[in-house]
Structure formats: structure tokens, C-alpha cells
Length: 383
Image (cartoon, rainbow, N blue to C red; front, side, top):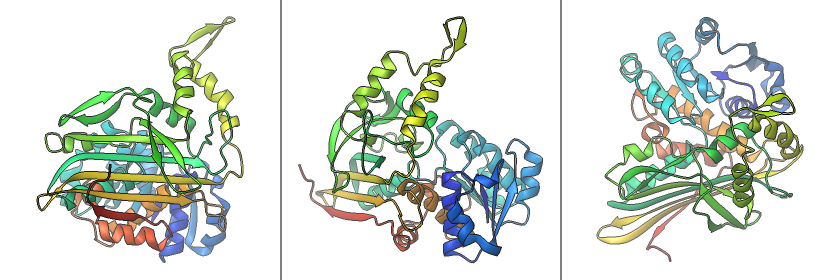
């Protein structure tokens, strides 16, 4: 198995492969020594570290040879070239997704991948990924669907001001989601709403408690177009502690997240670059224990009666191994996808999104084996 990217999610993916399979794992990165210590501790003779510049597609294809599957935890802009190389070489491929236009490019590889009996699956992390797989299952369980609501967030168990938030992956990526229009479905049609808008409160058990939910981009991926005209309402919202969205909105409206260069004392700077340089060290506190909260609510009818299917998850930092909840829910999901692909357990060969191609039962059972416990319930709507 080949894992591309040795950052947080790539390290978690490699750890899971080494923990739950007997595979030899190659972990490739431009700086592979950054791999987390918990991976090295378990890897021993089954872990191979490789230096790789993902821009060097010739070397990428050379490295891919001899592997059964590649799982990419690289930045999203590498996803298409990595998928194309995997199809050319002849191995399964999955990634963390996060960019709808790139997913559409990858879908253009469908015929070639299917012809070679290969599975290519974008969007295999937490959101997009796990949350969409759960939503699709909820949709399948009902005869008609009226509303699909998706909520997810990764937060510190001990929140600290001013934002009550700790960076668990990339502040640059978070700010993209806070400033990009969010695709949703209203009246059966894909449309956009402003990020950070339509704040609502959602209740979870401790340590989450009362959280606020608001629109952000990215997590819903291509679902609005796949269910266009079939489902009247479909929305994805990010979860944070109350008050977060109001603060970020003020920062955004002051222009501090802007991308257009400005002159400051005869120096040209990009406001967002300056904001990241200042805020990232403050929001990236070491040793913070996090949690991931997730909820999917699908409302419609079954057998002529109003029904709601709900999935919940509250996953906590793994103190034994030092693995964050965000790494567990994202990196383990990616690892599980690669394992299902190699086992021939995906729905069909070719290019499928995770919610189209992932078999629900084996996927959720695999998460349960790792202590990532999806709770589900079905019954009359609650108001």
C-alpha cells in the first residue's frame, strides 16, 4: 500500500494500515522524516519511507509500480494528477477530496479505470467522505426524502479564547471554507449561500455540549448536482463553539482575509497571508486534546409514514497513541477505503465518489473496529 503525504492525515492512514493489515506500507512525502512517531513505532520492517516531490509525475508513476493501492493525503490540487498516474500505472486510488471541480476532472478517468478493473475514489476523508456516506445511506433507507442536513466539526475539548478553536489541519484550508460561497440544495436546485450564514444551535453530549452550526464550503462536494430535482433541501454546516462565526465574520468583513495585495508602509502584503502568519501559531497549541462531532439527519417518508434517519458520532483524542480525533476520523476513513478497494468490496470499478462506491456495512463495521462509533436511529420526526 502506498500513502502519499506524511502529514497528520497521511500518518494516521499509514498507522491504520500497519495496525489492521499485514501490508507493506510505503509512506512518501517531500519531507518523509516529518512522519508521526506513532507510525515509526508500529512500522518496524513493514514501513518504508520515500522522498517524493508530487510535482514530479515521472517519479510518482515509478514509485506507484508494485503497489496495489495508493491513498493520497496530499493537498487537494494534486488529486487529479495522482489519480491519472494511478490509472496509467494500474493501481487503485483514493484521496481526501475537498475540491468539487477536481472531482469532476477525476470523473473523466472513469472509462479508463473501469476498463482496467480499477477503483478510483475521491472524497474519502471525514467531510467530504464519512458524512456523505452516512447521508447516502439515510437517503437509501427512505422511500422519499424531503430534507438532508449534514453537520460536522473538529474542536478542542478545552476551548480557549479568542476563537475557542484549535487548528487540526490547515488554517489556509479553513479560511477557504469561511470565505467561499457554500453550495446547497433549495427547492430541489443547487444554489449558493454565504459562508458563515444561517447560524443555528445543535446539541451534543459532553465534551461538545451546545455547538453552533453555519454554512461553509467543501463538505457537500458533488451531492447537490447528483440529487438535483430529487431532494428539495440538502445542506452542509460546520460546527464550532458558540460565538465563533460572529468573530470570524467580523474579521472577514474588515478585509483581513482578503487575497488582493495591499500596500503597507511601502511593502506589498496579502492580508490573508499576514493573518495566517499571526494567527496560526496562536491557534496551533501543542498537546491539545480534540473531539470530532458529526450528525446527519435525513427526513422523508417510508411506507407512507413520516420518518427520520439520524447518524451521530462523537469521537475523542486517542491519548494512548497520541492520535487526534480528526486524524482518526479522516485518516482511518482513507485507509479503510484503500483496504476495501484492494479487497474488491467497492460497488463497482471506475471512478465513484465515496458515497457512491463505498459499501456502507463493511465501512461502518471497519470504523467500529477502530473505536469510531457511529450511532444510528430511525423513527418519527422529532420537533
